Length: 494
Ligand code: NAD
Image 1: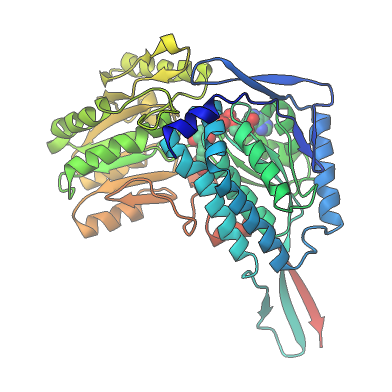
Image 2 (image 1 turned 90 degrees about the vertical axis):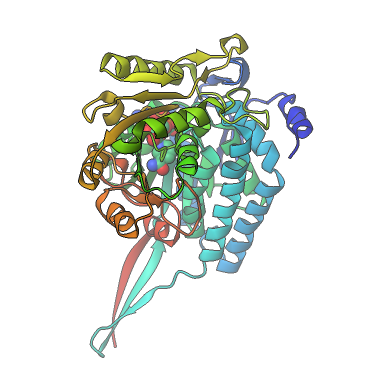
């Protein structure tokens, strides 16, 4: 990747996007479209179909028909593996095109996007392509006059609703295992980041996925997302997004066919730094990177810094120094550290959280403002607020923006208590040289992921999912497969 290639792609006009139903690109049934603004400069980029409930129903009907006639699950595993592997190869071959399109749509800095979006998506699809012929049924240890077999069957039609922060990566976390297990899928990308994901779906067809096995409908969550949630023909709903929407999806399931609902929701992840951290400079750099990359629009962002009181001032000074050295700006420039906030509404919400934090006694020690307004884009200076109390809004509510709250602690017990003082339980981190303390923190902090002497890190082999109000079930790893299969017992009298 070099800047010249990126600029060539940036200069390309983006054609309007329509739905993908039964292998065809189709407009909204009422002809409606939604304008897509680029967060880089606030200018119109293209448009996407504004889906109707009827569009969603057509996509679900297509997925149902494809599942019932077994055009995908009926193929030998080796054939399905070949298609998914080819899809991953095509994503790799189109990586820069996909990444630049995505960045123009959602504002993530290109350095991160290229790895976390097409790079990760291709890796995930390949991982599940390889997994698909390694999922065995079981023979139960029954009495000898019967044979108890446990089959692992696809669930049927999977509905997948995706957020805007990492559409390809998160999309692949659902699509990979769902398709590998033989299901049909209907995808609903986010209003503010549909483009690269829709393009990635096209590549699946190019790789040989039969029409109807993967359908995608763009539009508003409250319209097409609701139609998906209420459908009697969707068997499993998988979702990444806010807790607010997650709750709605559970309601939709209860009001319709009681479909299984798997939620990956938000977090308010504690990043705990003890005075005995092996390397405080590194901890400071990772603490800043762990919350500010992608403008803080990362579900596992370490947005609460809990610092042992004896090193509080010195450590916060080190984090401020790293933060102020981060370049914020045009996300398509390769040396940008922090790109644009996804939308003007999200930026306004972020600034509102800063105001509230100040009103509640917090001190903004760096950032706190919108910057680069002359570009027309949505940029915010990475912001650190000290003196954040356990009851403060900045402790209790997810910002999903570049805002870090800092709270001191005195003892291990207090660190655990503070870490667990929210309704969330997605991720966390601890810096210490004491092995016992590290293990205790991993055990006692109630999250789905704990990092020790690092923060972030990604691999297909380990699950990612939250506990408490951060969600249920996990994406990634072989464990994710359980969401996309049903167990069926065959009880055979011998
Ligand atoms: P959101 O809940 O507003 O939207 C997510 C998706 O849900 C979008 O596609 C949207 O169109 C759809 N939607 C909205 N209303 C709907 C409705 N009534 N019915 C059905 N669908 C509806 O979330 P967002 O702003 O796109 O994403 C940010 C949130 O996602 C944050 O809370 C973040 O922490 C979370 N997130 C979690 C993870 C994770 O793995 N746990 C990863 C990334 C983001």
